[in-house]
Image 1 (tube, rainbow, N blue to C red):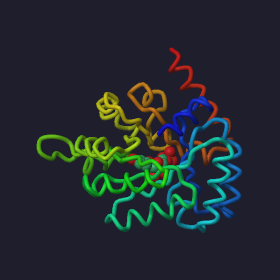
Image 2 (cartoon, helix red, strand yellow; image 1 turned 120 degrees about the vertical axis):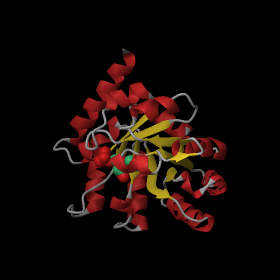
Image 3 (cartoon, rainbow, N blue to C red; image 1 turned 45 degrees about the horizontal axis):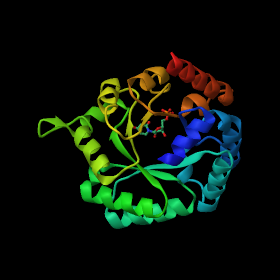
Length: 240
Ligand code: 3DU
């Protein structure tokens, strides 16, 4: 949690680059490295998802993480951990050995499972970011379900806080939920900007601390230009 806050301060950017490379790309490690070099000055972290974690080897991922760190950035593994304790722990072992600084987990596993996962990650020197409300239209069918007179997401928020998680994910397309969770202490990571219809400034104004952005940057003709534009717009809107 502190490491990403320092990186964001140093880079003057709350952007977490979702390094989601299309399957059509050949030589994924080279393209990943090129993208990190291009936008490294405009972001504070890189998030890797199945796009790279499935096709690449552990040593290829480790090399990407070394490059990420050489730019003063943090690295987040987004496989939304959601399994039994033993499996989650093995996943954390592998991911931290590959150099990830944090993992994303799904509080659906329950209070005990989430607490064990956080403990394990913290012991390995890594953080945990808990999914509280996703950005896609169907999110309300899960995270928005009414349970005991309140949305499941509010239970997930309590679980994240109780387990000692280092942050939460709330979609940038869910401005009401962002405003609600902004009152609590955990940093909020917000995906869903651009390609999914969310707006960077609105998300920040509604309570997001970090913006997770993928396709609008990665698939742009000039990724650095787009990342820099978003970074400058956010800096300006925060100053206002
Ligand atoms: O829509 P984009 O291309 O900017 O990518 C968003 C990334 O964030 C992508 O990796 C997706 O899997 C992840 N994500 C969400 O989009 C929504 C969530 O609630 C959690 C993660």
